[in-house]
Image (cartoon, rainbow over all chains, first blue to last red; front, side, top):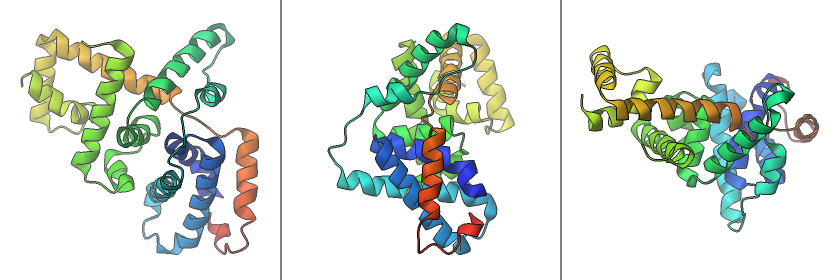
Length: 159
Length: 82
């Protein structure tokens, strides 16, 4: 259960950012953990369990995407599920900020969005981001850099 | 280091993986270029904000249901290792 407890939220976050629907994202997480459990014997390095699981999640989510081309973003659901910060005194500001950031991330193209979520939201090391996405480290860096730039301009304007 | 070089090295600079000579050159450039310093500051803010607010998480109920669904998979033989 350790793998589930430690990674269920990260897997859900990655899945949701691709399939845009909580029910489908849950299905993706379920099938990812089932596949991970079945294939656990093939995992040579236990330190890579998180990356390995997220790479399965990414592939599973892409497979769902391929069968649900018409999935649309659902801002109403997003607003309901945004995590909020600490004290009640700044709750409104925190919620507003969170909605703004969620919307900006949602507006990124899929390839940039997944790289950004893995690196800057889930804090996956760049080498592992590349591994999960099945691309080279230079390509992963470029995607993350581009996503950061787009978000910076979206949220703060052109410098 | 000029502005274009800083831009192309920004990700490595933020990740702290530039070699020491390049890092020193980047710091030197940032000390004299207000525009690059602003881009760096804003990029750091974006990362920090996304890290704090960019996550969509499972509710406690969803998490419990999901775990039950995974555990209910009849063909799973490696669950103890999960």
